[in-house]
Image (cartoon, rainbow, N blue to C red; front, side, top):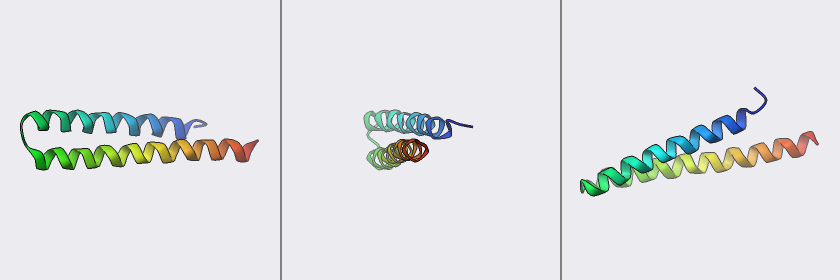
Length: 64
C-alpha cells in the first residue's frame, strides 16, 4: 500500500468528475438546486484530491 495517496487522489478526482457530470445533466434539466448541490460535491472532492496530493509530496519530502 505504498501509493495509497495516489490511489485516493485518483478516486477523489474520479468522484468529482462524476458529480460534475451529474451537475451538467441537471443544468440542462433546469434543476438548479441539484446543480448547486452537485457542484458543491464536485468542489469537495477536488479539494480532497489537492490535499492528498500535497500530503503525498510532504510524505516524500520527509522520507528523503
